[in-house]
Structure formats: structure tokens, C-alpha cells
Amino acid sequence: MKKIECYIQPYELDKLSEKLWGVKGVKGLSATEVKGFGVQRGFKATETAKKGEVKLLPKLKIEMVVKEKDVKEITDKLVEVLRTGRLGDGKIFVTPVDDAVRTRTGERGQAAIE
Ligand SMILES: Nc1ncnc2c1ncn2[C@@H]1O[C@H](COP(=O)(O)OP(=O)(O)OP(=O)(O)O)[C@@H](O)[C@H]1O
Ligand SMILES: [Mg+2]
Image (cartoon, rainbow, N blue to C red; front, side):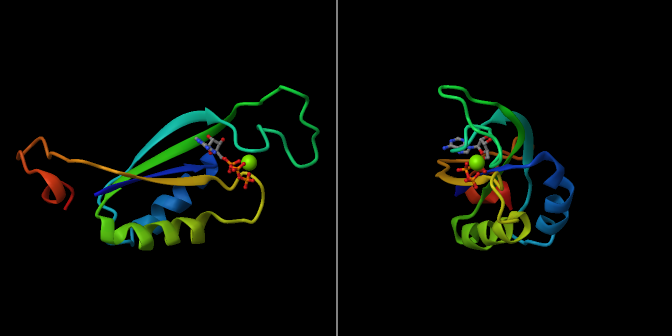
């Protein structure tokens, strides 16, 4: 199993949820309000970043634990839906997940996310 962690513009959430609904490997997701910055340190292309200064911009972190075989399809879909080509389109990270448990049944591993 893998965790896909995707930082998005907050206004993209509704559109993204709608599109992810159709992807079979997505069985659940969490969205968390975060603040962050990327390589532009929170400044727009038209602004000049002052030395040593950063702006923390509101973003959403989307987390999905999925089967490894579904990672490519899901990350491709994220890019397809979220890419505008402008700075700040977001970032996607993929990390390993050791185990999962469905609390209601005690099912473990992949069975817990099916
Ligand atoms: N290396 C990182 N580690 C953790 N979070 C990050 C990292 N890079 C970006 N983020 C998160 O993703 C958000 C969006 O980043 P952003 O899209 O600006 O990345 P970028 O690398 O600057 O790409 P771009 O050049 O397209 O703007 C940030 O506000 C931050 O919350
Ligand atoms: Mg950026």
C-alpha cells in the first residue's frame, strides 16, 4: 500500500472529489487545511520575494491510502484535473504504508482499504 499526499489549491476540492469518485482505486480520502509554501516561497510571479521572507499560503492536503497498483492511475488523474500550468498547481508525494486496519471488522492490510 501507498499513501498519496497531494497539496492543492483549496478551491479545487469540489472538482477533484467529483473526478476522483470515478477512479476505482480511490476508496476514501482525507482533506486537511494547511498552510505552506513551495519554491517561490509563497510569492506570485509578479512579486519580488524579499530576502529571507516567506508567505504561508492556505492549501489543502489530500491524503489517500491506496493499493500500489493504483498509484499511477490516481496520480495521473490528479495531474489531469489539477494542472493549469501556473505556479502553485501543487505537489504530490507518494510514501509507503506498512499496514491498515478497518476498526469495525479488524481486517488488516489491503482488505482494510477495499
Ligand atoms: N517540498 C515540499 N514539502 C512539503 N510540502 C510542500 C513542498 N513543496 C510544496 N509543498 C506544499 O505544496 C504547496 C504548493 O506548492 P507549489 O505548487 O507552489 O510547489 P512548487 O514546487 O513551488 O511548484 P510551482 O513552481 O509549480 O509553484 C505548498 O504551499 C506547500 O504546502
Ligand atoms: Mg510554487
